[in-house]
Every structure is written in C-alpha cells, then in structure tokens.
Image (cartoon, rainbow, N blue to C red; front, side, top):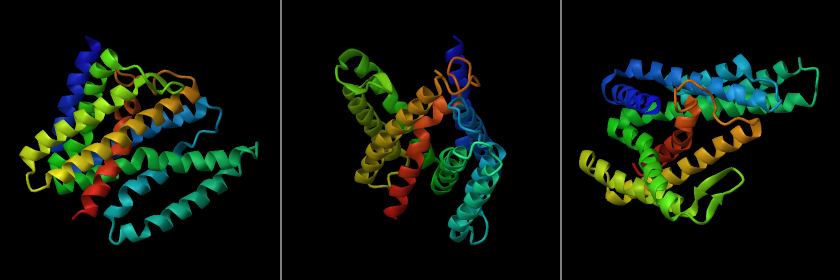
Length: 261
C-alpha cells in the first residue's frame, strides 16, 4: 500500500510540474531534483571508499543547470566546466591520499553532469512542448511496464546477469516495443506535427538509452554494496532509483528532436 500511495503522489506531482507550474517554478523544481539526485549520488560515491565530491560537485552541477540560461551562456559552458575541473583538482590537493585526487575530481565532474545536466535538457524540452517532456519522462515508465510482464512470463536470456540478474533480453525488447506504442499513441494525438518516423526514432533510442541508464545506476549501487540509492520515497527507495532511466533518456530525446528541426 505504501508503494502505491507513493507512486500516486509522484504521478500527481509530475503532472503538476510538467503541465501546470510556470516556467520559473519548473526551473526551481529542476534545481531541487538535481540536488536530490546529487545527494544520493554523493552518498554512493562515499560508500565505494572514494572521497565525497560534496559541495564543490554540487556547485559545478548548478552551473551546468543554469549556464545556458544566462546571456551567451551556452558558448561558455565548456569554459565553465574546464574552470570547474581546475577548482576540483585544486580542492583535491587537500586529500592526504594522493591516489584519491583523480578519483575525487572525476567523480565530482561526473556527478555534476550525471545528476544536473538532464534537468537542463528537461527545461529545454518543456520549452518546446510539455507533451514532448512528458513523453521523454514517461517512455521508460511505459517500457518498464511492458518489460515487467513480458520478462516475467517469457524472459529466458539474461541481459546483464552481473548487474541486474532479473532483466532479460525478452524484457528489454518488450520495453522498446512498449515505448514505441506509447509514443505513437501519445505524441501522435497531442503533437501530430511531429512525423511518426521521428516519434518512433525518439521512442526507440530514448528507451534504449533509458535501459542503459537503469543498468548504470544499478552498477553504481552494486559497487557501493547497497540495494537502493536512498530512502526518500517510501516503498520505492531513492529518487535515483526512480529517475535513473530518465537521466539517460532526456538528452537523447532532446538531441534527436533538435537535430531534426
């Protein structure tokens, strides 16, 4: 029951943030989501015996999220990231174990991009169309549902036995099919201006990226020796556990959409 109530609350919150809240409110929500994702990522890094990226990694992530919103900001993102990496390396010099400096800086920069950049892309997708953003977020939810039922009934060939023993190639294929059906029905109705072949391309590649996102987060958790990324969501674990697929799907959907405009 706890799991169901949490799922309903998350769906209502997602609906409000995607379709109703103003642009400023959505940017604030993107910032909060990025911070929550980073908080769990930071703990997973520490659980693997690597110095926590901490506040400097979070500040780098906030730059990643907001720099493109500033005048001529997009042209300065690479410069900002390079300067951020310099700051992170300098901060790493305080570590007594010199072998940890590279790990610290790398994990901080990776975490900034991993947990904040997708929400920058969510802002861009919402600016293009609220339906496009909902599609990008929901395509893996639809795929996961198809994968669960098909994989449980027909799954025989392990997809990634070391990382996620319960996933199968049959379930992965069903997930792609589920995302395609969802995308064709949803975007086909709400945004008929987008050609169906483009919708299918976004659905297929976005779903595949999302499945890799799920596997990547599972690998990080296994490396940390934990089952869930956190306990923020009763019955669902942490926020990364719920959004791992979206972290990889959002940039892929945006890339395809922008490339074809």
